[in-house]
Length: 409
Ligand SMILES: *Cc1c(COP(=O)(O)O)cnc(C)c1O
Image (cartoon, rainbow, N blue to C red; front, top):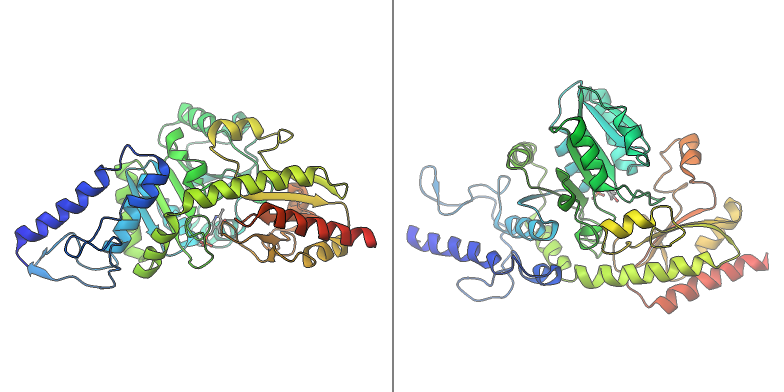
């Protein structure tokens, strides 16, 4: 192929995304990174499986790619799309959410301190406590982020990173991102603020718009949306952070396969529809649970009774697809309730089209020490629902039947 032809194709791809820059979120989901094939007009870009790329002369590849660990056309399509959704200049996709966490922590060096929200995702907690702090000597301080002035008191000259989730898992504590950024910047401007936005997806919240430095997500959840891929993603508006993350990404090689990138793009096409439905189903389920005599407490920031309602309303488009609650009952009754559900599948994870039920104490949060679980309010009766896109009537009927089963005994 002639060099001029290569150039025309590259320009065609670059021009494509510009057309959708000012469009709404759902339009972006269906178009950015998804240009029709230049030669055949195929409306879906082909999956590019090639591991290596031809060069015109030594060191002059045909296009921007030379080796797929460093860059791959299908992966680039997904990264362009994710940047469009997260209001970001740059994005990278990683082989899993956890590989993403590792990549970000590689920005730090021994002795650096990370201030971390206390109920951070269990896998993240395990990586921080059992690997990063022991093997790399990174210092992690875990605390509640309910009062950010209090958080600020633990900042010192070694503090290099703030790590949080909003909302947290499974009690859905929500952090005022604008306030966190303001207070942290007033202390020192170069502290890297990282938000794990997995529970929101960019449809419900875009933390970069509030000035955080890096947004990270497990794309395994809402982005993929069909429980059929494992992937992570980072987005940032800082050229410096992107350069560093990209160097780590290609050096450690935590890259996803092109086929998985294609699957993620396919998932994102319907992200808005799925999340809108999950938001509305979740709200109705939270309201229903609040009326149930067997329920001691419901955790859902969409409820006016939630202490996080105001913050969530301010910074989110919707309240998300996770509803947690505490059943009035012992462990056996809770297990019985969970096992009698027919439409909710008993499984870990979230964000997919099918509704799931999880007992954090025995499943996702089993590795969290019992006293910490108690402190966080995750007891025997604690149940987490990850709401899917099924008919709301069916979901509520399923819960209703499980409650009735409790009454019999
Ligand atoms: C699932 C999850 C992760 C880990 O992502 P994987 O894709 O499973 O590696 C990280 N953070 C949160 C909040 C998650 O829910």
